[in-house]
Length: 105
Image (cartoon, rainbow, N blue to C red; front, side):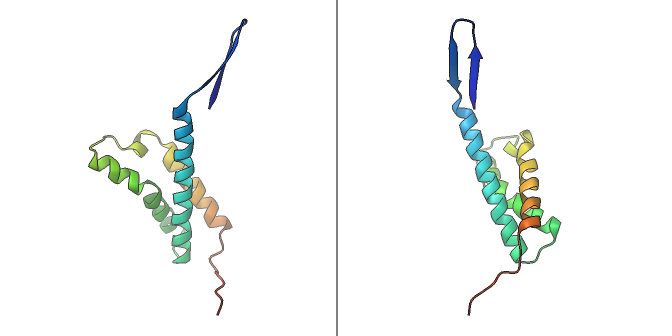
């Protein structure tokens, strides 16, 4: 996020806004992946069903946007870190999420 250029005479710190936007994009991908996994676990899906629902939830909106705007290739086909992050966050949620919800009343 911050690039520090060391020069014998001066110390310059630069900030690239694209890295901040990419960071927020990854936070949004994690949030949507987690919400898709929670929904799939609540509906008693298996591991691969939960992964599929989390992928569709996390990258579905951006894919529709890219198709409407005729932007090819799709964003998640260029940068595989999206699918990697979705897979890791979905599997982590499946390990730590208890599908036995307690309801009152």
